[in-house]
Every structure is written in C-alpha cells, then in structure tokens.
Length: 214
Image 1: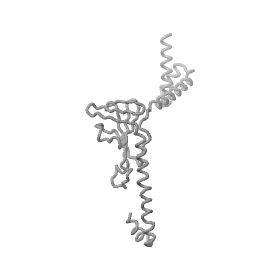
Image 2 (image 1 turned 30 degrees about the vertical axis):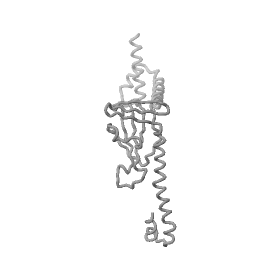
Image 3 (image 1 turned 180 degrees about the horizontal axis):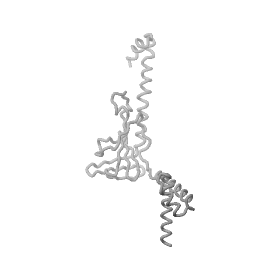
C-alpha cells in the first residue's frame, strides 16, 4: 500500500502531505472494492449453494452420487448418463488478465439424461477429481452460483402441454376439411409451419382410420 504515496505525489502531482494522508486509504478502498468484497460474495454464493450437498465419485465403477444431507435425497448416475459443462472465469481463459481472489472460482454443471442439473463448486470438487471429459467449457465474468440442484422436467412438461394445446387448436381449425382437401394441402410442404403441418397429418391419419373401419 505504501506505493500509493509516491504514486499520488509523482504521477498525480499531489503534495506529500496529501499523498501520505489519503494515498493508502484510497488504495485500501480500491482493493476492498475490486477484490475482497467480490471474493466474499462469490465464496458465500458457493458455500450457500453446496452447503447441504455431498458428492461421491467412484472412478473405478464410473458412478457419481449426489447426496442432499437435509432432505436425505440421493441420486446416483453412471458417467455415461451425464454431460459435464465447466464454468470458468475469463481470467482462467487468459492468464494475462488481472487476477483477483474471485477470478479463481469455478463450478461444474452435471446434466443428467432425465434433465436434472447439479452445480458443483470448485471448493467442493474440480474436474481433475472425476474422470469424465467435459463436453463444453463456458467462460464467464462473474462466477457466482445460485443453486446446486434443478429439475428441468416440470419446465419440459409445461412446454409439451403448451405444444399439445397449440396442436389441438390447429386440428380444430382444420377439422371441417375433407380427406382430399387435407391431402392437397400437404402436397406443398413449405406452405405450413411445423405445428399446422403436424395437425394436418394427424387429421389425415384419423380420416384414413375412419375410412378403413367403414
């Protein structure tokens, strides 16, 4: 911090009294703002996200166990059931950048076949501790974490429901068309988007089934 005194005097042209009085406190304030406080925030986010999570890796059997201590839930996956994304900071991409305490944090995201996500802090486990090749590496500026676990299945289910509702609406709209009219419209594949085309194809199949029964 003493370097702030000659810096303020020679570079900024301040007198010695000002440089001695205000130089060090200003440098300490800058250090707190760009390093200490951000590092504390990132570390706290990593701690809170993973505080109830225990990760056990069996590299011999190629199995990972994610155990939540409070809820007593445990999820076990084989390595081939997982996709791994590494989230690294921009500093870890280019070591010529300014290094800070928080720029060395990172986390791994494990995405399962059943659309669950487990986010594991580098304070708990690094990619060197598990023999799974990361499928992707993403570089981010701010390496904070929100949650250790997310089940995406409800979101996917909602999207599927919305899609089915739109499909049903298209089918209702085309329901008065005859078999020949539907067939004629399907002859031009670029005339309709995916959902209306699917609705026409389903109606055609239904009319085919009805005609076969008759």
